[in-house]
Length: 337
Image (cartoon, rainbow, N blue to C red; front, side, top):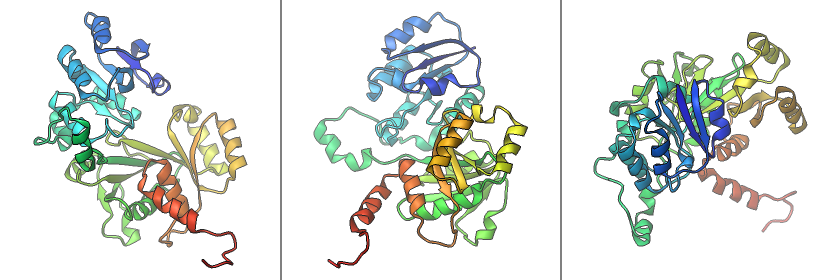
């Protein structure tokens, strides 16, 4: 049986498909957790990092590693720059904290299959330990401190053939304008039809090794198709083609399909729904749509809707481009400056 310590991600963790013996919510000092769980038997503790007071101070995690058995703790990271910086992640590993993830879907996998050092070695910076710095030192080192760690984004079909392969390809084309990005498909060979030699193919078993080998990339897009495992992904996009036949098939196959997608990033793909239709879809399915992507022309080099999607996913380098385009756009373009 497992325990959950949550705060910001309480609702997300409440839907984990694991056996729970105890759950507490709030912000806690490390001493609070030590006193509550030292003599309490449990299998694994799932710890929402925002439940720790001063969690962005690495010394707090150091205190946790000294006073508790961190091999029995799975930490759900938040999306802050500090926590996801290479220095912070490297320091976690130096303390023996190997089981951390930004993807709640990976928690159940980590409970059953805990990471070893080999699984997280790509994040370990042996020559760059996390040390306390002054404000002046932080400013001087800001370029390194604010580097974005590797994001592994899985794209998975929920309805059959919802377009994960083409969307992965299009997102890779768009992201490559601003980021060092790779795209890989799992257990399929459909990328060959795009005639793009930079697209990669691997198996489910070899995906972790592929990610480790290419950890110098900023983004790895993983086409999971219908069956791929999400265990290696830091984030997952769940694609639904909102056609009547596809939705009816989905519900007939699994009446709890949308219940299982609670708090997941649901993206409508190849969608002809307008904003009102999307609200109706959300009401009837009791779900929340993260983004609505219409049918796209895969021959175009620029897809504004995909830039908007990437901005919502947190790829901030596109915000400047979007702002410039809005500034330069004119309603009729009659008057020249």
